Length: 372
Image 1 (cartoon, helix red, strand yellow):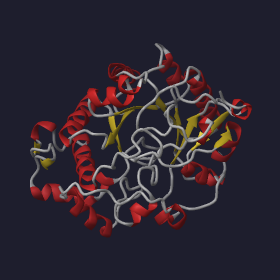
Image 2 (tube, one colour):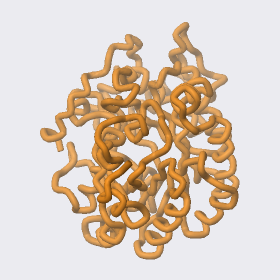
Image 3 (cartoon, one colour):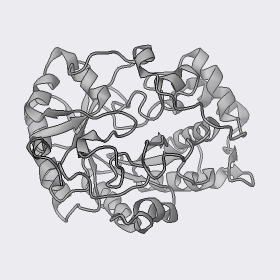
């Protein structure tokens, strides 16, 4: 049961907005640590009865009891306040967003989400100059819907498969948590999306650190690239009061190796068949000469956020500090750089790539007020 207030603040007329997007739109005051800028405004459909899925790691999971209302739940580490779509559109056309190149509309698993996504995409495309992406939910996508989405002007879609193996997917998103999602359906929609939107216009989200080995993650990355999709990489971050609230973040060494691997595979510089792993499934050889590998590490690019491009940017969806706290970033564990790493950053990264100790991540103390 949800209260009347929530019933009035639902999609498509209202949307949740990431904290980073709220700052960018001028709805909240503040700035990003190290002067980062957000180039993609992230929007989330919202309903009084919330998301019907129950993914073990997700802040929006129906079993996560953080308040009586869906809007009380955080997602990817931060709050998502609700604003009227009309107000969002007005802000997107203001000077606050002169640097923004893309808007992403994220679905939740709710029977109304498909129709409401089309409404929101149409309004943003018709009333703003920005490119529009959609993070879709394969469980509720019906035949013909992807075509409608494309006709309205959405140029790219994302599919959050998240887990690297069918066993992990089922355990964390399907039967293991009494959730509705199926591994086979998600990959089917990836294939359908590629047919509809074309090579390079579909992004597959993967979360490092859900319990997979590096070799398992490397294999699914190769599969995605071979299909013609893009890899959008995330580092697991524990959501308080979720079933995985005590699950550790992946070690920084694990995450850096997968970032580097994803970059190399995505750019055709290596292949899964050329990799070597140790007995723990960790990558110990990328199939490149040491000098070549060092060259790509020193560029810093492999360790930047991966996401949909903009009109001028290779990555517009750069999600500043979405999977680490500013405090962790300050201490040298900025998981996805929302800007190009500097020489000091690269010196630290170079050591992290070859750290096989699996030492725990820096504590997830949220010191945002000190660093934003």
